[in-house]
Amino acid sequence: MGAVCVHEQDYISHNTPRRRIPPCPAPPPASGACRKRRGRAGPGRAAMAGGGAARAALLLLLGAAAAPGPARGSQGDREPLYRECLGRCERRNCSGAALRHFRARQPLYMGLTGWTCGDDCRYECMWRTVRLYLQGGRRVPQFHGKWPFWRFLFVQEPASALASLLNGLASFLMLLRYKAAVPPASPMYPTCVAFAWVSVNAWFWSTVFHTKDTAVTEKLDYFCASAVVLHSVYLCCVRTLGLRRPALIGVFRAFLLLFLACHVSYLTLVRFDYGYNMAANVAIGLLNLLWWLWWCLRNRPRLPHVWKCAVVVLLLQAGALLELLDFPPLFWVLDAHALWHISTVPLNVLFYSFLVDDSLYLLKANSDLSKAD
Image 1 (spheres, rainbow, N blue to C red):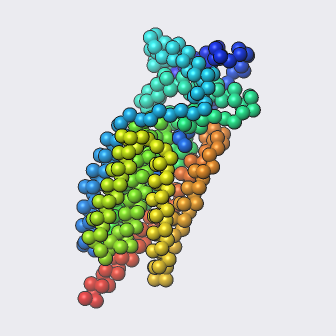
Image 2 (tube, rainbow, N blue to C red):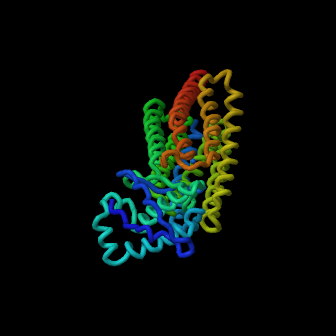
Image 3 (tube, one colour):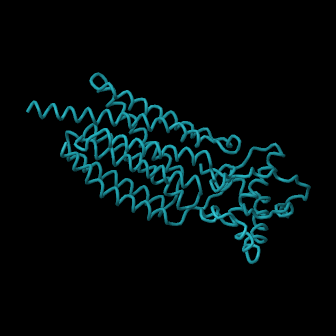
């Protein structure tokens, strides 16, 4: 795959006693990198008016993502062994004739997806450092805020990338099913369709980020995940309150967009604080959970399909607890974050099934009301 050449002496620090180091096991033919730091007429018009706001929010996310990213450091990349290995590797392989040779040998798909000589040096030196840790009986460290992962072709985190792709595909297919089953006259139609597109967009950027982690793809993953959480709260507000109070929806939508703008601006212009980002999303997620559950319990006697919504929000919060299980990836592929993404695939399908049932119920209720009038 056009890998750089890293010799044993290249990763022995001058501050570390020189000793014989067994060669690091070569990655499989398609190999890996590391894991991330530790997503009625009145309401109809209001929801459709949100389309312009959604486009503005997307432009905000794209602009914020282009801003410089934070410096990330972990125990592994602070190791003298790793730093010495990386420095020597880059000097030997990433300039002049050696760099031209690397580019000539590098597979086209690696170059097209942004993998550089420096990336390959970091990958090779990471695994040599991991091998030394394992030989010494020490816990595997993180590198640049991520666990070590085998790279599959050009995919940095294969399990998380595949799970994100499946979630996006499930969201898109269920969007098509929703549009085929629910007439646009349904009061929730515009809001549900907008939510589906926001979700598809978020899963797309999640797939891109887990394929190749850069400052831009990381921010797009995080910010678009926040947009999904906020849009879920908006969807809940429209369904529970907005059908009877259209004016409330406009105010609430403006508040959520303002919150998203402040959230993104703080993380982009002030400090990219991972702890704050997680706390904000957890708080909004809990609000979403309690709001939906309150509505489901109130309407369970007359709306039999609300059980689907209740199951989804409960299992989503339970699945999120997987993120607390921070462990080195199994087989260097499957970590807690990947398990969380895998668990959400069937929940996506069940939630859109609820949206179809509920939208058809509202359409029928409006039709019966019109006939009664």
